[in-house]
Every structure is written in C-alpha cells, then in structure tokens.
Image 1: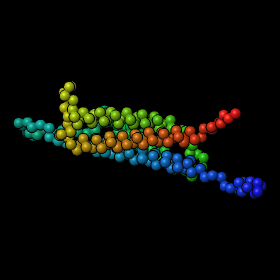
Image 2 (image 1 turned 90 degrees about the horizontal axis):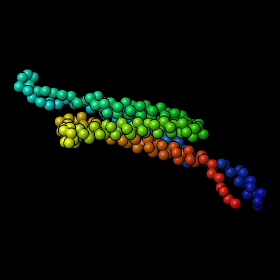
Image 3 (image 1 turned 180 degrees about the vertical axis):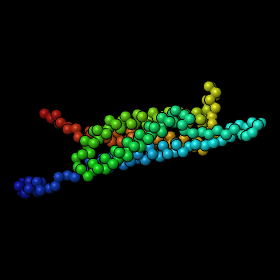
Image 4 (image 1 turned 60 degrees about the horizontal axis):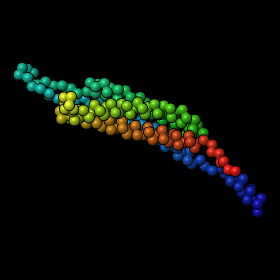
Length: 198
C-alpha cells in the first residue's frame, strides 16, 4: 500500500500555478487601463478649446471674444505632458507584459523591473492630476479672498472637458496604485519562508 501511494504521488502532475497566471493577466489588464486612461485624458484636455463673448464695446466689432484653451495654463500643459508619458508607458508595458504571458517564469522578472517605474509614474501622474484639479476648482468656484474670478459660468464646455479629463486621470492614478500593490503582492509570493520550528 505504501509503495502504491508513493508511485501515485510521483506520477501526479505538478500543481498548476494559477495564482501566478492570474497575477500576470491582472497585470496586463491594469497596464492597459493605464494606457487607455492616459490617452483619454489627453484627448479630452487638448480638445477643450471654447470661444465666448466676454465683453461689449461701443465701437466695431462691438463684441470682444476670448478663447479658453488648455495651453493657457502651465498646470494643464504639465498635465498633458505627464498623461502623455503615462499613456505611452502603459502601452509599451502592456505589450511587453502580453509577450511575457507566453514565456513562463518571465513575469516575475518583469515586475521586479517595472515596479520602480510604476512608482515614479504614479508620483508624476498624481502630481499632474492634483495641479490640474486645483486650477479647475478655481475656474469652477473662484476665490473671493484673492479676487480670482470663476470662469466656468462663461466657458461651460471648456470646464466640462477639463473636469472629465481630471476625473479620467484620477482613475488612471488609482489603476497605477493597484498595479503597484499587485506587483508587491506578486513579488512577496517569491520570498522563501523559513519555518523556525524546534
């Protein structure tokens, strides 16, 4: 009986590393979401131009029109640059992660390299989102203490574009944070655990 049980145990196939596969698939999905959110945020921001009448004068042309564009604000320019980098990074790492799925054992090595850049990119994206969000809030609410007038009652479509772009960027930042947590969890599974039993 003992020899038969030993033979069955030896003949049994090794356990399928389902957890590792699920980590790799989740990694690809999150990286794609980072790419998609970065691309969407940039496209919405750069298409936010709006022209409105801001004053009337007694001489031709009688109406003064002013355009609101993202490049009028350094914070929005920084936002577009940062999210462009995030989108490009998300695309490249998504493709590399997809390639790694076909090569067992390569995902862990990739994660150990990617996690440093993931943390750096999260800092840049969060900073850009915060800066753009602060300027957008001033445009929406103004600041009566320093006489900064709100503009969203005039440039409604512009503000909707900016608000939507910031919201998508915030979603991308959350995806990056989840990606980092997933990478840390995946790497922690590879740390050998020693039982100190006496």
